[in-house]
Image 1 (cartoon, rainbow, N blue to C red):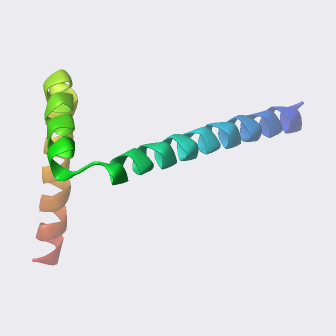
Image 2: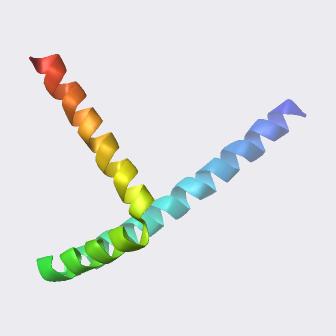
Amino acid sequence: MAQHMFSSLGETADRKFHALANTSREQFEKFKKKNLEDLYRDTKGWVRRNQGKALVGAVTTGVVIGWFLRRRG
């Protein structure tokens, strides 16, 4: 029973991983085709639609950079 459950869990994780990899590959291909102006406009639009996520991401990035700089000093 337990072996079947872990096998099923592994298969599910494998499918999710491959789906994520495919989506990432597609997004990267779209990213390569855009110029900087398009990327800036898209990013600005995403930040306006997702202000909370953008703020959390910026704070997290600042904390991580600060942590690395502090460890080096």
